[in-house]
Length: 154
Image 1 (tube, helix red, strand yellow):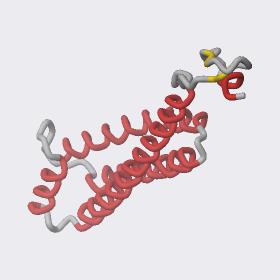
Image 2 (cartoon, rainbow, N blue to C red):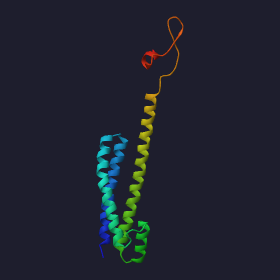
Image 3 (cartoon, rainbow, N blue to C red):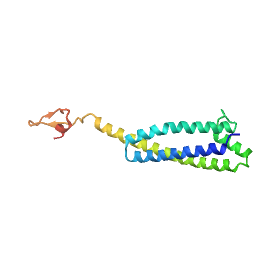
């Protein structure tokens, strides 16, 4: 039988590294550092692939390959193998780290959405057509706007 406790330990290490990247991502989002975000994304993608691979290895180790519900499958395995305390301990630690990663990811999504809203609002302000306010010339007659906000507002 494969070393399930070892597989879970490797998953714990991978998710811990992922959490570290999410923390860095959050810091970069707070500072609006787009260059750092690109580098972090480049690091996250292979790490996600490694986490998925480790999960597949774990699922194969418990005989649940191709079955939906990895969490439920693992819970059933633990119920059938109550004597394996190391696996149960590592599983609980992995679940805690997964909850932490999800919370960080959700917060980062909110920060990204905030930046997108701000950028959209700024673009809307910068690209709105000039107001059609009437200006009066020296003769007292209304003049059309010139299309230049600086000249028209003078």
